Image (cartoon, rainbow, N blue to C red; front, side):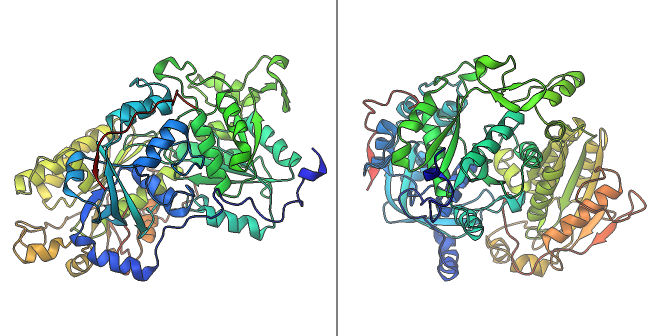
Length: 619
C-alpha cells in the first residue's frame, strides 16, 4: 500500500456520516420535567427492537437520523435507499404502533415511550401518524414476502399497523447489566481512540464467531493500513425469544486474546439485525463510520441469511460487497474485501484463495461429536473459542424472588440474570412478574384466586426450565405462603428451589413508587393491594434474605452469586469469588440495595415502483 494511505496522513478520526454525531439525550433538568408530566401522557411500551433502535438513535449510531422516520423518508428509503433529502440511507427505522393506539393520539400530542416495565425512556411529540405498506417493504428490503425469511416474517407478522414520528427527547438509555466495559457509544469510542492518537480504524462486524481465518485476516488488514481494529458485535434483539448473545460474546472475548491489546478492541452494538443483504452491508458501513472507522471489512456473503431452512443464498455471494464498494466514496469509508478465504492446513497464519486449499472457512460451527470438535479446534478455530461456545451444562435450579411491590425484586433479578449469562453456558430465563402477567396471564384480575393462578403459572414454567437443565429466575410479589410452597414443590420434583426474600420496608417501597400504585391503593382506587389492603405473608425459612434499602443491587447480586458458588450451584474458576457458607438450606441474610429509586430494565430486492404507503392518518 502506498505511503499516501498510511497512518499519519489523516489528522483526525473519520467524521460521522452527515458531518455531525447526533445526541438526543436531554439534560437532567429537562428530563425531570418530562418525568413529572409523563404520568398524564399516553404511554407506549417499546418492543426489544424498538428499544434497540431508540438507543442507536439517541447515541448517534444512526446519525444523521434524529428520530424515527416519517412517511416521506420511509417511502424514499424503501424505493431507492435514500432519505427524502437525497442522502444515502438503506434501511427504514420506524416506530410502529397498534392501529388502536394510533387512533387515540393526534399530531402535537406527547407520547411517553417506556420499556417493558414502564420506565420512561423518552418522550415523542407527534408530528405525523401514517400507515406503512409492509408487503412492499418486505419485497424491497428482503427480495421476498416469504415467512420462511426470518426478518420478513418479523416485519409482516410482528409489526404494528401504523407508524408515528416527531420530535424525540430521550430521558435515559435502556439499562444493560451485561458486559458493561464492552458497551461504548460512538462518542465514547471516538474519545478512547482520540486519547490514543488513533486516526485510522478498521471496522469489522462479525456475523457470528471469529475463528483463525477471521483473526489472521483482520490482523493483517490492520497492519497493512497502519490502523487499529474495532470489532463491533450486534447484540440487539428482534423480539423476546431471540437466541442469546452471551455465549457469542464470551467466544469473541476469547478470540480477542489472540490480538495485541493495542491492535484490537471489542465493542457491543445494541443493534437489532435486519438481515437485508446489500442494504444491510451499506447500513453497517454507515454505522461504523459514525464510530470513527476509516475502513470497513466486508465478507463475501455478508448478511445473507438464506431463505429459511434451505439456507440457499438469497442475495448473491458478492452482491453486498459490490454494492457497498460502489457507494463507498459517498459514504466516506474505504471497503476492504474479505472474500471466501481458506486456511492452509497446519499453516494457520497463511491465507489462500479459494483455489489454493480444500478447507473453506465458514462463520458458524455446527454441533459435532467430541472427536470432531478436537479436530476442528486444531485447524479451524481456537480451543478457547470453542470451549466458551460449548461448555458442559449442569443441572437446573430456580431462583424465586418474593417481596412487596417496589422492593427491588425486578432489578435484582435482572442484575443476577445478566451476571449469570456472562458466566454460564446453561440457559438462563428471567420470568419477571409484570412481564409474565402481561404475556401469559393478561386475562387474570387481582383477586387472591387470580394472583395465585398467576404465580403458579410462573412456577410451572420455572419447573420446566429447571427440569431441562436451565436456570429460572422468577420475580413475582407472591404474597401467600401456601402458593410459594406449591411452586417450591413443583420445582423440587426435578431440581432445586432457592427462595430469596426481598425484605425492603414498606415505607421505602412506597417512596420508590413511580407508577403511583400505593397512592391509588391508599385512596381506595385499587382494591386488595398487597401491603396496604391485603396482607403479605413473610417467608418463614427462605434460603436468602436481602433488603434493598441498605446496599446496592449490584452488591446484593454479588452476595447471592457467592451463595450459589458456595453451595455448588455454580462452577469455580469464574471471576465471581465465593464467600463461605456451610449449610445448604440454612438461610443467610444479605442486607442489600440502593439509595433512591432503583433503575428498571428488563439492494436486497427490486425497489423500483415502491407504492404509496397508504393513507395518512394525521399530519
